[in-house]
Image (cartoon, one colour):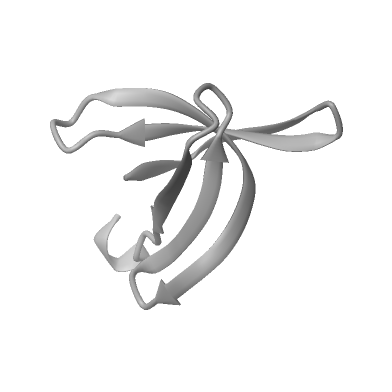
Amino acid sequence: MVHAPSHLQAEKDGAKITTVVATTPGGDSKEVQYTEPNVVGNGSFGVVFQARLVKTNETVAIKKVLQDKRFK
């Protein structure tokens, strides 16, 4: 799960790199860098992107959960 708003964008060799702080199922935080994000689905709870991890070049799915202001 991605925990926004902690994200930064930069460019390396012409590719836009996004850095986010993700929360693991165990509750730990982890910095993740990805590039080539493409929306593959969306709904009332958030958006799912397909992206490529910078560190491993692995293709992954990233779910960005939208925060409902009623529950902040």
